[in-house]
Length: 242
Image 1 (spheres, one colour):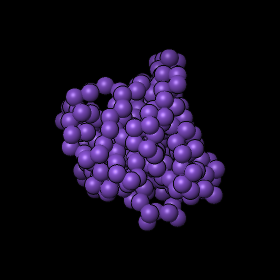
Image 2 (cartoon, one colour):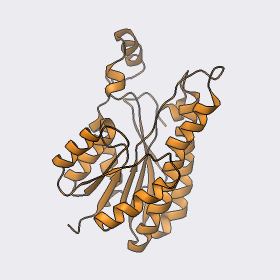
Image 3 (cartoon, one colour):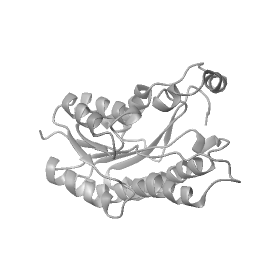
């Protein structure tokens, strides 16, 4: 039970759940964060040894600090943060709503900043830590109808580069994983013609799986990634190459 603790936000399903499973396999005790779908979060907890569940709406004032304190209280430490939770409110710029912009920043960007801030204070004591922010291919190449979402993901990428510089001297690395089109509940429900159009943009000719993203996260939180910081691993089948 002295093994390191990894927080995964938005871990009840999809990419978050895949990351939680992979980190548990890697030997981490996992703090499973969720906002809704308690039945999925509890089922995941039953599956992962020594894990705990934490229900917080991270867009609410004080919730990020409270989550970190709760993890410290119940699990004793916090060594890894995977900022995965987020929303996508899609609309072209002409009709995009200012309130949707504000909600996206409050849900996607501010929690990544605050959780990294509060968790880094615990990591400083051990002179070791890993922060991984899940961004998106659209934060690098853009996408019609996703001006708000791509802006938020691009902001997190820039923020991560600066965090990496701030924390490097304390043995804490900060990186991003930028998924492309990943098979999740959202993409599975799209019409076939939309899926086919999306596939034409992917050189590998298939959608990614949540486990593909989890594998990149697994590397970035390992000891073997100690000389990688301020970077982005693109997991997109070749859509975007930089």
